[in-house]
Amino acid sequence: GAGVSQSPSNKVTEKGKDVELRCDPISGHTALYWYRQRLGQGLEFLIYFQGNSAPDKSGLPSDRFSAERTGESVSTLTIQRTQQEDSAVYLCASSPSGRRTDTQYFGPGTRLTVL
Amino acid sequence: SQQGEEDPQALSIQEGENATMNCSYKTSINNLQWYRQNSGRGLVHLILIRSNEREKHSGRLRVTLDTSKKSSSLLITASRAADTASYFCATLNQAGTALIFGKGTTLSVSS
Image (cartoon, rainbow over all chains, first blue to last red; front, side, top):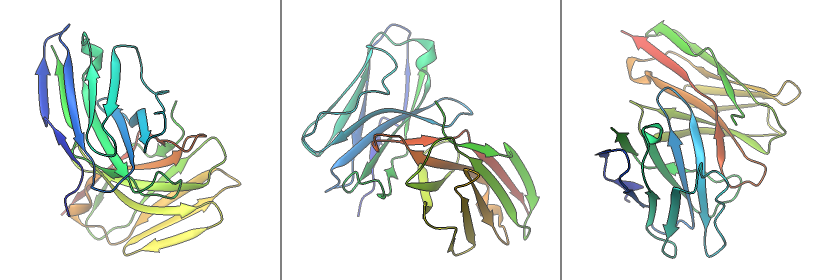
């Protein structure tokens, strides 16, 4: 079956513009995660969705970042008024139920470059 | 903040040699996972070891966990050029809602 997909694969934008990144999780997975990875670094958690529960937004770095998820399907991560420090690879992952022992399945990521 | 810290940061070996990467973490854990990343993009889950396990095998991979030292190691035996990648250990945050990753070990296997 299809894995996690993300679009676009690459995005170049100018400082101050808004961007939207999309994630399609594996069908049937109730949990969805967004991470950010700066060059040469590990992944930083951004936000977590689990079913109809309130999302865990504790990793969002500023109020310029927001994310939505429609039911148990597609999620979009929006970055408003982008800054150069937002340049990174944004990775989405999904897992079957969000249990602590679940494997998270990652998408290929969106490489965002802010000029 | 980062939970896991991998060591070494970079490792270069010849095909056929074994590669050992270490990971230290700070807080108590339910389990620890190792992931592999090729070319700075998507991650692939390699293995999960639970806090009550000391060693686990999967193919050419061997993972150990020492909860008293808060450390884990990943051993890749008989390495291949295709093993060239970055390897990350990860543990769950306290809420159990997200993985916390270290900076990773970059492994380069030359043929």
